[in-house]
Length: 196
Image (cartoon, rainbow, N blue to C red; front, side, top):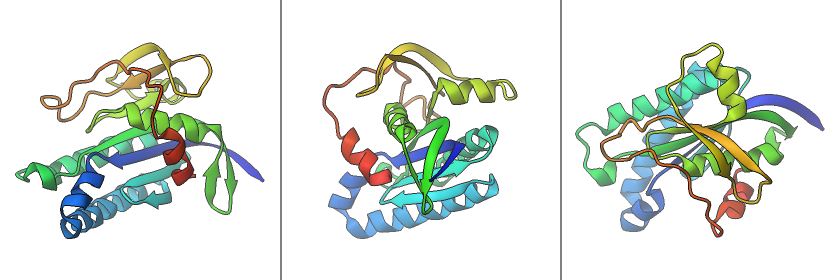
């Protein structure tokens, strides 16, 4: 079993399941565009596409800086696509970033870091990035990061409290950055199983 320390990016499209219910053809067209943009930007920033699961993307990077810059560029490219689009046809993505040692088996990634990553992504507003303190501390030594710090945040089924960092949404007039609220019930277990 191989263990490696990597930077991880996990993204998800807001409202995709609802769009799929309303217009499957439209939803599939939008997903194809999303997949093309995500593949291009991950490759350009030296990342590895680990897995796609419907509207979510999991990627790994050897460099924390590449992971961070990729996530910002990904959001900006989607914003450019969204210009002049009606709301149902916009691609609104939220992103989680984390750094840690993971198990790699047959190209798939496993371990506790995946649990943390899934929770971070779920806390990000559309058009924003939510980061763990481990990746934030590594990146901020080199890049000036504009992010809001939240101390003592509880993450579901994880012990203790955590410091997390969220960038402001690039759609800040529509989505305000807020302090995470711990939810007792969610679909985290289901989603983590999907991305492993």
